[in-house]
Image (cartoon, rainbow, N blue to C red):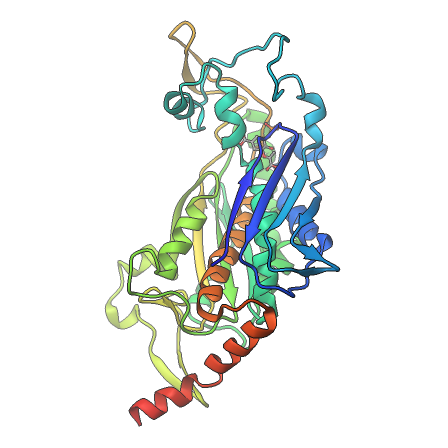
Length: 402
Ligand code: EPS
């Protein structure tokens, strides 16, 4: 079983993570993780904070000479901005005066946080609820991503829309109709999207989006969007239908909904399938050589909570960033009077980053099921288990039925 925990406040000294359960002998380097961290920081529409930070991981344990040891992997990412916050975020009791934050921003965790934890300063809610935490998730989940790569499983994403601006080309449909090359690698989507400032696949759409972001920035507003996350190269048989908490699709939905500001997740044709006839909603089964596959992939690579072997396709929606420079209405908790919500340095759009974080959560969830199915204490043992299962899938079906 693999699992990870993160710790750290947005303006604290550092973010940390501990990843446990990865078998021994997986090659991993700080450079590999830093590449993913850099991708998470990119995207037109980010705020001033991203100009301060250049996230770099330091691996503290669990790795020797570039290979995992099977022991917990701990890592740290220092917050450069800490230098400007050491008084405000002091761990020890401080005599310095603090300006307590008393006006909650609608849509942020400000009000629910102080309500739940009985804080007397909204700063105490802001710090851990901030999407800054996702830097440690991306670092930790890079290890899961690396594990999957050993077995030919890659993960990719692209931004489908920002502020309601879509491409004229519906690439999602190409995926759902399975009109992709047999050697399709999901990472190729990211390789293309990463070349765009807003991680879209269409130049005309990109220009329209950037122009809209410029306009809303001037107005002090923010935007959300939708994005597609895909995994390819999975064997059939990850996940299970036996329990609510072992279904692969349910776990993926939970993992991606946990990313800050994500409000909806669809697998495969999702909501659209509710309008279709069964006859053009499901994926016909066909035999190709020594495999059984599907003609289309409207199920998004999962049937009955179990991977089919076709790409996993997840669509998600991110709401607009809650911090507004032209704020909407709130209540000052000190006076209980109606006021404008507090302005605070923030991003205007973070959908491109959100898609990278979703990739990380997808990698983790798939890796978790991969380890459950093919577990072992070393990569070599896992490879044997994987080969033993995958090389005999068709043979077993034939033995049982033919
Ligand atoms: C965030 C507010 C901004 C974002 C932050 C999320 O940070 P700050 O308050 O320091 O300007 O930039 O995201 C990150 C720092 C990050 O690394 O993604 C918030 O309130 O959620």
